[in-house]
Amino acid sequence: MNNSILIADDNMEIIKILKPYIEKEGFNVIFALDGEEALLKFKHYNPELILLDIMMPYIDGIEVCNRIRKESNTPIIMITAKSEEADKILGLNSGADDYISKPFSPGEVVARIKAVLRRIAPVSNSQLSVIKYPSLELDINNYLVKVDDVNMNLTKKEIEVLWMLSGSPNKIIKRDELLDNIWGVDYFGDPRTVDTHIKRIRTKLNLNNQYVWDIKTVWGIGYKFEVEDD
Image 1 (spheres, one colour):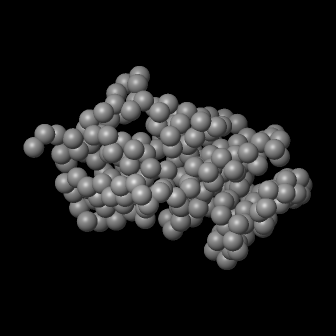
Image 2 (cartoon, rainbow, N blue to C red):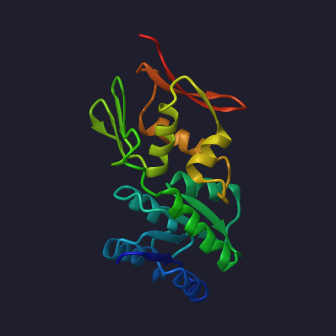
């Protein structure tokens, strides 16, 4: 189903409150009341975005997010009654694009949906679409990253972070600059999401100083895609 939003929450009252606000923006709303149903609805409808509660029966939202991320970069906004920092980090580490805590206003949820969808708009074909370094190839139009000719399982946001850094080799890019350019100036979430994504990129690429390029932390400032001289 095109232009659809999947709301996965075991509280039907939450769904009833959000549904008219989301539909008013032109989206079709589908819903699931537990984790198993959420996975089934995701595979059947292929929604444009998912609002995903953490605390759900059968399969919790974190595990649902993990399973979806193994096969899709569909944007996910974690939505939960929990507000502890650990839960926010856990959601982001699972591949969520944003995080919102209950209680919330329907208007804020709609604003976040629109902000996330704006951030994943396709890159213009007129821009350079492929960046190559020894053992590394990034294709931003197709959202592909290869290391030693092996496709890496990175999310869209992780690819965009890596793209922005590798596009300016040996240049320090501030954390706020990454946040504004990739997540947007209207991003509502935690600025430390940049650090979380960098950590995941390093882990997935298994970086251990084995290449002529690496992602370096510039403490208190940001990050640098460091490339050794030939």
